[in-house]
Image 1 (cartoon, rainbow, N blue to C red):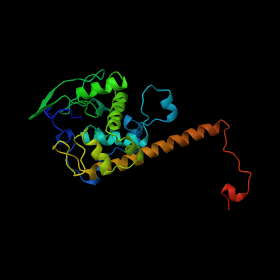
Image 2: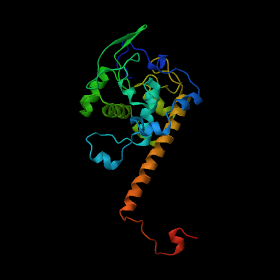
Image 3: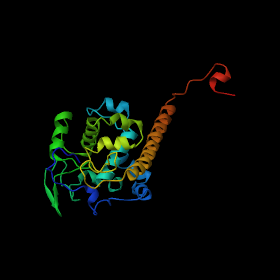
Image 4: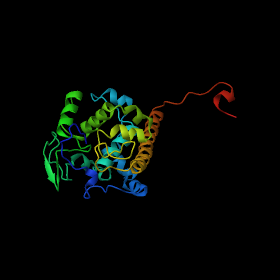
Length: 247
């Protein structure tokens, strides 16, 4: 969730017992990751290729590394929902928005707190307005939410670190001013609020990235198989055996 003013009153999804407990062990973080078939059948496992991005008007390619970070943000913000797409409909307090045509922009009161955060990445209304102006997207569906989150990651100068494929304390710290559930280098929230432990985020990220890379590899193998069935074959090496990688 984005903070642009100190007087914005909100409750971290991490503090909501009805969503995700604040502190979990590394084993619990791994258990929270959906099984590979679940990732494959939901948006939490969707990745795009360079070729696909060329036919899309959206700016960001979603690689396994970027998707793993998006999923980890959802885990931190309490909208992971075992990888199911319902997480994109979550509003502050755990209720679900009825329509995804636009950001609900609805302040919800829960206990001592109030917030208008909504979506998988808990966008505040003014943050989503920035996303819309910057990217020219419409609606509030899962696809544009993913794009909006990556825009915020880039805005925090963290996209290159994301593409490395390692969840580091520095990466988490760069995102801490955007999502208060991420820890700073000191391990605390940028805003002095409850925060996810870095070890839990790192554990979740590692398991997720491993599964997403499997999905990518399986997809590439399937595409290679289709190409082979059309008569496309690998070039035959006609040089010396040693240059062909043969003993």
